[in-house]
Length: 83
Ligand SMILES: CC(C)(COP(=O)(O)OP(=O)(O)OC[C@H]1O[C@@H](n2cnc3c(N)ncnc32)[C@H](O)[C@@H]1OP(=O)(O)O)[C@@H](O)C(=O)NCCC(=O)NCCS
Image (cartoon, rainbow, N blue to C red):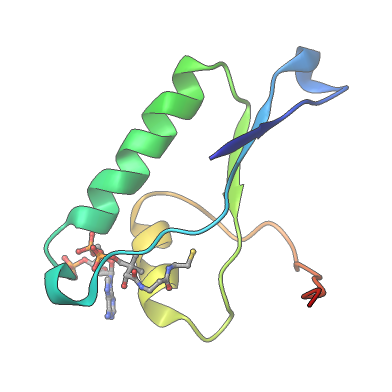
């Protein structure tokens, strides 16, 4: 998790989750849900006004996980992977 300062929203931070990964052998047991819950709690405790993340548009497990936790699409991400 990374907090990004904001010049608006009263100076509250925006928290970005770079990558969430659960080991193959323990998926579908609620680990991802717990990790997102903890991330949201920590962001709230730090006064963040928003939590955001990216995932590939064909990543249905991620889409379903985040949707089940109340995260909603807010736009289209544009990225370039630098090698
Ligand atoms: C996405 C990921 C983090 C989910 O972790 P997890 O521990 O398996 O998730 P949970 O057990 O908490 O699942 C919560 C809900 O997410 C959805 N979900 C999770 N995996 C799913 C899958 N393979 N297919 C469809 N829905 C899925 C379901 O709605 C699930 O609830 P349910 O099990 O009651 O149906 C895991 O699959 C992963 O590490 N994937 C590879 C990395 C990745 O894509 N990360 C996300 C991009 S940042």
